[in-house]
Image (cartoon, rainbow, N blue to C red; front, side, top):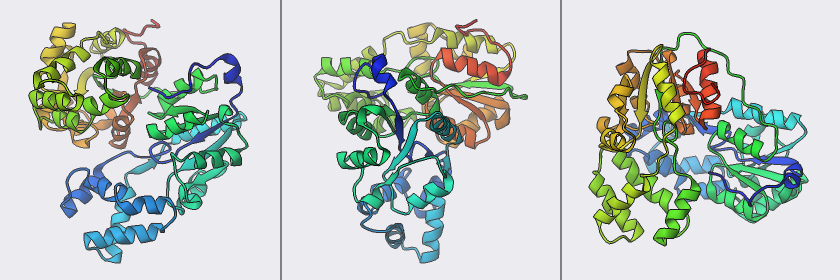
Length: 433
């Protein structure tokens, strides 16, 4: 899904002169959750508690606005945990140790810069991040606007206006890329072409749709791959898009943007590790959507997913690969997924794949590294002997961090040829065959 100001005509496409990128969650991302999970165990915090401690802290916004320094912010965190200065420094280092710079995305930005496009950076971050940009990405961005240096932050219109002024760009000439929808929406309201970031692969497709040069990366073949691991939703089956969700929201008479949080938020994560039942999930859906009963909630979920979204070419590719590779399905799923897919698509998952991992059955979900390790153990392979196809960037990031090969799935016409390039041969199921 992407936010935009509407259909782009050829004249509008030709006017784009610059691109403004967010940093955290886009260029720099947490590619492995392990260091933060370790901190949670060490300090007795629940899963996700370290992120909440930092990013939900009232003083984090103060640091992003430049009202306090990073040092003052982390000193407060240390005090709340009862840590001394040395322990606080260790905590801070460990917190960020799972973050990495996306070299593929940086290469794309540098290519656009080399093609004559203005490339800028707009980041909600403490003031000292400005120096980090110069150290990590010298010469790539001009301007660099950091909220902590300006005393304002996204989605404030003022910081967008400031960035455009320093870049010498008009809104209609500018593409803005961010991983937070509210920031993308704010940019669109000002007349910019806003793109919601989900990874370099879908971003390339979105940029090409706007008429910008964004060729796919050259992928070299790799020897020694013995297994291909597929995700289900978004790969074997297309995911519900924003248009489909909006149609249902209108039918249900709920506010725009309601359904993603209801269907794929925290309760869904609990369902996907078997912590709640389908009946309990139905109660949650009914409550959030003001339906008459838990049964009505379950009925809505069933109806929502009855559309035939099967990617037949990907199913065919998975079947063709079994003559040369082991195959696995690694799915963040719900209890009873095999029965549901048998009824919906006449697919027997146990027969289609050598290994089938349902998160709800094993009590783990991606991007937890443990579920990748479990999958590899059942395949009897080392990380470097497997490649993962998954549409979610965070899942791909963790696979890479573990030493696996991984491709972010966009659609069959893009991603199956990339898989062929990685494997070094053609496979069945490719629409181009």
